[in-house]
Image 1 (cartoon, helix red, strand yellow):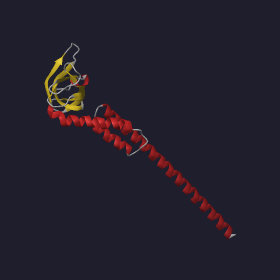
Image 2 (tube, rainbow, N blue to C red):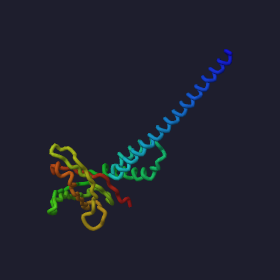
Image 3 (spheres, rainbow, N blue to C red):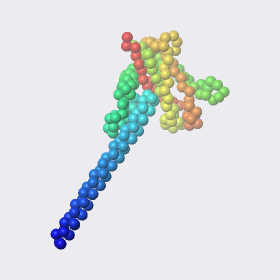
Image 4 (cartoon, one colour):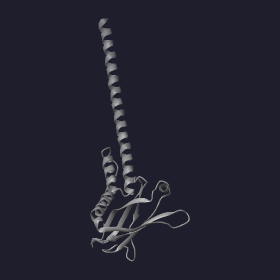
Length: 201
């Protein structure tokens, strides 16, 4: 009789252990699935931020975010975007290296109409030996304390004739100050050449 009771007890213990192991396995699988889902969400969020940075021509930041997203998931097809980002970084490096040859001058703040639109326009002179085929100027809007409160990009266009800005030629740019900036803007600003593309022919 004791043997029968012992066998029954052992059977209960074995079944209990088996159920616990099965539950633990299911729980681990569920946790893994949650982690995978969490990683995919993080990767997607970072990739979205990277695309936004790319659209804003902030290519170095965009590359950092793309690389961070790939730590969480390699399932996102980003090769085409990364190619554009690398090209943008090259253009930003062009601007950094060539900026000493670019002279920004004749900058004016103008109100052109009765609607309160404020425009900032200026010119650049290409004092270097390269022909510029594409370029962007960045403006930072400053408050009374000199703090940055906003930024924008404007295309550099040839002032006359050819669309290219050859050595010794003049280019021009114009910004329309955003309405949301005007209340806190001190009419102070900073300008810099953001990126450049050259005619290598």
